[in-house]
Amino acid sequence: MFNLINNHDCKTELKKMEVKITPVRLFAMKFFESAKQPVDVSEIISYFKNNNIKADPATIFRLVNVFVEKGILKRIDFGEGKTRYELSNKGDHHHLICTNCGHIESVEDSHMSNFEAEIKKDKGFIVKSHSLEFFGICLNCQS
Amino acid sequence: MFNLINNHDCKTELKKMEVKITPVRLFAMKFFESAKQPVDVSEIISYFKNNNIKADPATIFRLVNVFVEKGILKRIDFGEGKTRYELSNKGDHHHLICTNCGHIESVEDSHMSNFEAEIKKDKGFIVKSHSLEFFGICLNCQS
DNA sequence: TATACTAACGCAAGTAGGTTGCATTTACGT
DNA sequence: ACGTAAATGCAACCTACTTGCGTTAGTATA
Image (cartoon, rainbow over all chains, first blue to last red):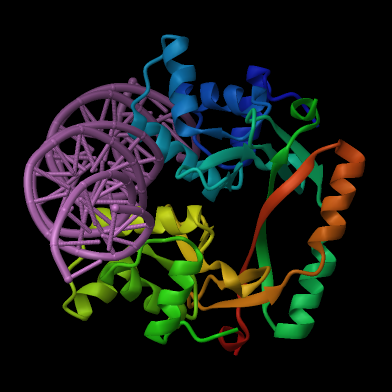
């Protein structure tokens, strides 16, 4: 997977996804690429502020919605009363959220396709997507 | 499982959970028990309005928080920007949410304990709880 | 059963996440 | 270089949810 932190690659990615290239969007892409965890809108706004680049909150909210529509970002909800976002090109995985320190790690998706096939068979319900998050105590917080 | 729609049983349940019995709480309990799906606060407020029983929104928000603390209700999040609630005494299950008609059905939890054991083994992360919801098309909407 | 203490309630004000209408600016195909 | 549709900034707005405070009402104890 190529490195989107590079400005040129950010442009390529946006063009591929049929999104108009603007300074705000390029800068936001750098942030998404550098993020180790799903980010929320207030974090994006802070990133802009810290770098003295002005961007209206409304613009950022519109940006993430467009990026989700275009398939660049995935919406993620940890039940915090706000939406988080993460680049789609990271493959299917779920999150382990430490309720003690807030640390977030990922775990590969290995069981869900079986589960979804079972749901189709038992209930006739066709699963298009799912959300699965685990809450608990990370290794570091156990000691 | 006894029938909480009955006023007497609602009282017993609240007393068992060490919650002070008030008219607002009894009436809310009836609603939770009669609900076929997880409900949100605006639905609870409508239920009171429809029955000409006055209850301040702040009271309802406080009520659900107390009920969650006491273990009577479980918080559920479908990523709608609001919290849903469901009685805890319904056992572990997940929801199938039809993105076409909004219908919600339940499916038993059969795969998660294996998954969680694996996570402990692979990552050392101790899972305390999880949230899993499926989005797709229900049988009825496929025809 | 009367009392007193704590917790629930109603009301109003406030906070945070998110959306929308409108005027202006900007990206980008021609 | 130009024209157009889309992106941006700003302000106003909406909904979910919380909090402070004065009043009311359960409930434990005497």
